[in-house]
Each structure stands twice: as structure tokens, then as C-alpha cells.
Length: 392
Image 1 (spheres, rainbow, N blue to C red):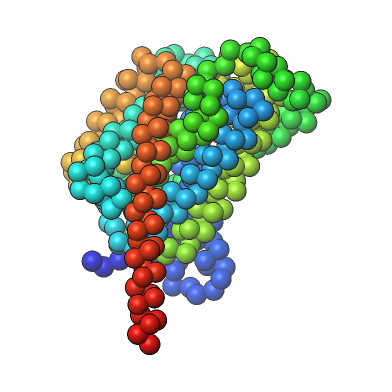
Image 2 (cartoon, rainbow, N blue to C red; image 1 turned 90 degrees about the vertical axis):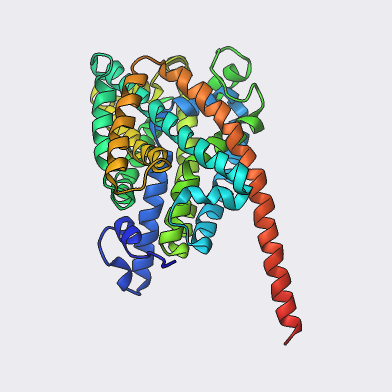
């Protein structure tokens, strides 16, 4: 099977025929493009609104670092494995990666389930857009979800190359805005972080929490639901692009995501008296800086929601139809409409807690299969290398 190294990488790098160059700067720009795509995919409605940071990290008080470290270790290993195996196997459809790790039967289950899960997460994104539009602009129920759905379906119809182009450009803007809001909040808190941290540890705030009080379980769940987001996406990208650049982008994205998560967590704790029970904590923080800041951030949250929503809808539909076909376009539009209607009647905060939590554990179970398979491949390669060396 011929490997397609041109289209996907060119889209991520920002132009057609990009890999005709051989200079180091070309590789840096390509890696930066993949980094932006990974960041944009990761930072969706839950992250941009800071609601998932509240439930996974802030709720654990001084133990939030254990949650973050566990999640980031899972993120690093699994994403490098997805891209590497996607490249080695020359995958043209990312969902095939599950059969590599889990075998035919269980792999087929994960293939279908991950597509369903990604689609359900798209409903969460629609809910986040809906809540943002209602809280910030007072728009009627459904307006935010409709706007997001129109933008997402239009982009998803363009396919993987169009998605990479959109994500690589929008992702860094979203991160920069979130970091700016969090940084200013911390500077204006006048040392309130330590006192509020003690209050959370003492149980003074009844915060929704994933993991039932176990920070390692929360980190496993957090990393677990991201696994099912990235598996098909990165396996296909790895199969169609230069592996060195894809993996470099993953490593860079880890630095930015971990840093942004930690900074946002500190900011939320610093103003926990305002953010504890808000649907969109990020907007509360922005409003304390300046009313105009909250208006701008609301638009940024929409951008973050959009960048994560596109590959989620694309992954969900991709299991049922081949990209570029009339059936794929029809199902993309139909899936968008169903998700939009569902988001208007389901509570956003509850969706984040239940859906991310339960499916995160199932995603983490996949890590066990990945470790076993990767170890077997590594040991098999080592044996072949030894045997070849002995024959020299």
C-alpha cells in the first residue's frame, strides 16, 4: 500500500508540497503544525470553559498535581504509540489501530465504541457552546449549539486535510487566550491560592469530582477519555505523514497542555469563591478582569469548542462511511443535527461528569493492551536484531 506523505503533512504545515524542502526549518514548521493540531483537539469545550479542570484537578485540591501527572504520562505514551504504529502499519483508516492492539474481536469493539464515544463527546461540545452562548450573551437555548453545528459540519465534510489546516492555525490562539486570562487572574488574586487550597482540602466546597476521591483514578480517567479521542486521529496522521515530525509535534503539545492545565488550575483555585459552582468558570475569571475580556474569551471558547468538535464528528462518522463519499457527507450533516438537538435538552455539567468519567476508565483499559502489544513488538525486534548480530 502506497504511503500518502504529501497531502496531510502539507495541510498541517500550512501549504501544498511543503515536504519538498529539506532544510531543518521545514521540519520545525511541520512539527509545529502537528503540535497545534494536537493542542486544538485536546482543548475543547471542557478545557476551554475550564469545567473539566474543575472536576478533574481543582476538586482534588493539593493533590491536583498527581491527577495531572498521571494524565500527561498516559497522553505521552499512548499518542506516541498511536502515531508510531500508524506509521509502521501504513494505516489509511485510523480505527484499524485497535485491531493491532486488541485483536480482531475486541479490536472491532473498540473501533465501533470509540467512534460512538467520540460522537457522544461531540454532543458535549455542542452543550458547551450552548451554555457559553446562554451564560455570556443571553441567547436562547439552542442558539450556541446551532452555530457550532453549522461550522463543524461544514469543516468535517472537507476531510482530514481540511481538519488539520483548521486545527493547526486556531489551536495556538485558543491556548494563548486561556493562558492570558489565567495568568492575569493569578496576579490579581493577591496570594489567595494557598488559603483557598486549604479550604478545598478541608472540604469547604462541594465540587463535582471524577475518581471518587482517588487522584490516580481521576488521572487515569482523564487520560483514558483522551485516548479514545486521539487513537484513530493520530494513527491515521502517523500513517500518512513523516513520523519524526508527528512525534515532535506530540512532544511539544504535551509541554503546552500540561503547562496550561496547571496554570488554569491555580487560577481557578485562586478565585474558588467565584468559580466553584459556575457552569463556565473561565468566563467568571475573565469577567473579574474586565467585562470586555469575558466577551472576547467567549468567542475564544467557541473557537476551542470548534477545533475539538470537528475531529470528533469526523471520527464518529468515519466508522460508518468512507471519507469523501456522498454517504459520508450525508451522515456528517445528519449526525450534526442529532447532536445539536440532543445538546439542547441535556445538562452540560452532568454530561462532562458522567460521559468523560465512565468512558475514561474504558479508555484506560486500552492502555493495558497497548503496553502488552508494544512490549511484544519491542522484544520481537530485539530478538531479530540479536539473531542478526550473531550471524555476522
